[in-house]
Amino acid sequence: MVGLLNKLYFGKIQFVIVEKIYFKVKSRKIVDSFFRQCISHTTVNNIHAEIVKRDTQKKGGRPSKLTAINKRGLVRAIISGKANTATQLVKELKDSTKIEISADMALKEGSTP
Image 1: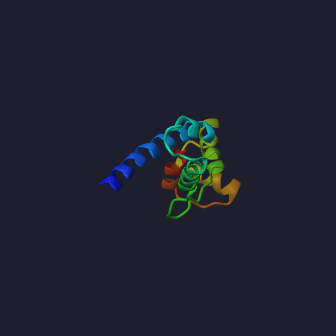
Image 2: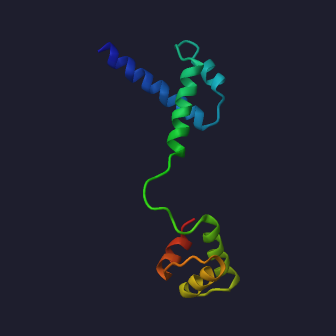
Image 3: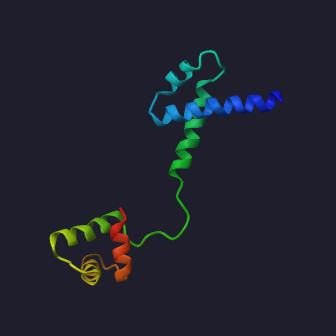
């Protein structure tokens, strides 16, 4: 029972540490805010490393054919009036970058940032 309570208590502390890390509070200040508990600078750094690792991990699945630059180019072509339809977008993209995509994909990829 005591072990479970310790885990729950540390879970609450860990949640507070994660919240402070997201608000860009320095790790030494986080440690100082827990002056009565036995939270070390190393513990805060380990939690921070886990967050960074989790946030930077790549998601699975097939990579997109279009990069962010290509997507911005599609939007720019529509705004400037070079392309009015998805077919014109596909032709513009093929001429400028040699990437072949369908008209449906141009609409889908062009609408997501």
